[in-house]
Amino acid sequence: MEITCYRDNEKSRESRELLADTYNLAITLLARSDNKHLFVPIRSMQYMAIVDADEFVFIDGERKCWIDIAWQNFQRKKRTTLVQPITYDAVYYRESLSEIMTRLQREFPLALRALIKKTPLKGSAHILRFPGSTD
Image 1 (cartoon, rainbow, N blue to C red):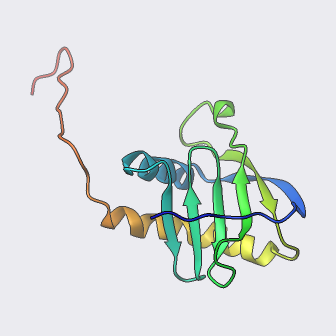
Image 2 (cartoon, helix red, strand yellow):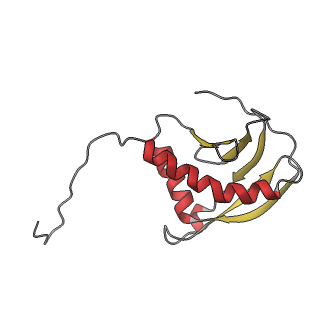
């Protein structure tokens, strides 16, 4: 699938935190994808999330290819463990999106979990033996 997205001028920006589980799941699904982008339908909101290595963008189904919100500048290197939340910038391209942002933070993880259930694992598995293991 290929989608061309457009951005209006930035209206506002704020620093936020994303739960580690959500970020890690999105990056895991992206790594499993054959493409450089991951499309995540958020059916409960009629939104589409497009995930790439640098940002997550959210498109309203009514506005088609216009980005409403982008999550950018993930501060990956500031985490000392994989379970710490990750700081990022939420960039708004329209006014009055605070309610949408609140819903996205609740619905996006659910959409990721639904997607991972449908995503088959590709490749082979390997069992690593550690020294001193009795198996």
